[in-house]
Structures are given as structure tokens and as C-alpha cells.
Amino acid sequence: MTKILTITNQKGGVGKTTTCVNLAASLAVTKKRVLMVDMDPQGNATMGSGVDKHHLKNSVYEVLTGDATMEESIIKKAPAGYDLVGSNGDLTAAEVELLQLPRREFRMKMALETIQDQYDFILIDNPPSLNLLTVNALAASSGVIIPMQCEYYALEGISALIGTINKINQRLNPSLKIEGILRTMFDPRMSLTKDVSEHLVEYFGDQVYRTVIPRNVRLAEAPSHGLPALMYDKNSRGAIAYLALAGELIRKIGQDDKQAGKQEQEG
Image (cartoon, rainbow, N blue to C red):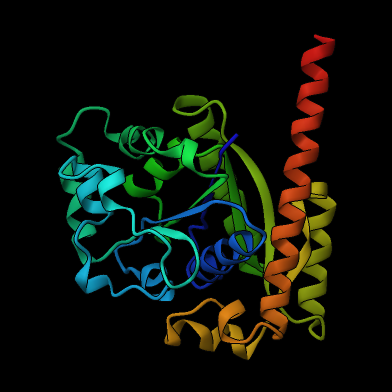
């Protein structure tokens, strides 16, 4: 069964795009069929996948407005090793146009339904704000991965984001749940990092991934070369951490599916 995962946080600079690109590449290396959808008009995930956002034949914009199908817009086996639907500045106009379209919150969901059986994982990167693009991603997804830095303001921001996810769950997508919380730019030498990390685990328990993503120069350099860290420097701490995250995600989903099957049998 396809897992559609939105990677989002209303706070910018927490490693959303880095996580989307590197997790997609790591899942692809484990032989999973992966599609990444770039829902951010900045197009950073597109560029970080080795695709020039300025020369897209079709993008997420055309998919959402109905000018192209999802099948027509997928770039097969982007240089980063997975399939991609890219994005660029055209997407800024989509929000206004979506307001005039039927089922405006479900445009991405309807588009993905036509191709999702071709993939094991579909990862959606989002802008750092709650707008109609993010709502489309959340309405289309089964789970949310929340990357966050272990700092004081991040704790405040995550409660607002969880409130948003709960509202989407109640009003638009009853299947939506938090898949996991990912600690990024982790520096164990800082006492605040450790304090916030402990608070997260205390409050969210198993929803916090055991894998942490360290502050890593190679991870920061890789996007400028249009590559995930795994292809830029596979031995870097950042690349190894995202491979570990992919393994943890696959195991966790397997356990959840097994548990759900058991409950179904008992019911």
C-alpha cells in the first residue's frame, strides 16, 4: 500500500526540503519506488534533485490547475534517483486560481489517485506556511513528518502545527496522522538541544524518531551541487543519518501495518 507523506513545518529553516530530498534518495536506494512532489514555489527540492526548475515542461502548477495530468508531469528517475514532479515560481499563481476551482482542497489528492499505485512512497515538500498548497498536501496524505530544530521557539511552533493537523483530520482527511517528529540540525554539545529533545520524547513518546539528523557541512553543501548527500558524500554523517531514518521509517510502517491487520482480525 502506498504511503503518502507530507513533510511540513510552518516554521522556516528547519530542514524540510533537506529531509524530503535526502529521505527520498535514501528510500530509493533501498529499492523502494519513490515519487517526490515539490509543492513549494521556491522549487528548492526540484533543484536539490538535480532538475532545473526554470526548464520544466509541466510542474505542480499545471497539475493543480488541471492543465496537465500527473502522469504527464512526472520526471522519471531524476538525477537524485527517484521520480519527481517539480515546482517553480509559477506555483505562486496557483493559490489564487485554486480559489475558483471545484474541490480546491483536494486537487493534489485527485491527481495522486491516478498514479499512486505505481509507488511505495510519495513524499511531498511544502512551503513554510499554512496556505492552500499545504492544505492540498495534507488532504492528500496519510501521514505527516515534522522536522524541527531542538530550540525553544520550535516547541511553541509545533503545538500550532499539531492543531492545524487535527483540524485537517476532522474536516478534510480522517486518515491523516502524525507519522513522526524528526530532530534536525542536532548538536548534542548544546544543553538547550538536549533539554528540548528530552521534552519532545517525554511529550510525544514513540512519535519522535530515534534517528536524529546532525548539523553537517556535507548536508548543507549537497543542494548547491543538485544532489542529495548520499550522492555527494555517502560517508558523511548527514547521508548516514538519512539512511538510518529511511530504515526506521520502513520498520515503523511495517509494525503499524501488522498491528492494524491484527486489530482487523480481532474486530
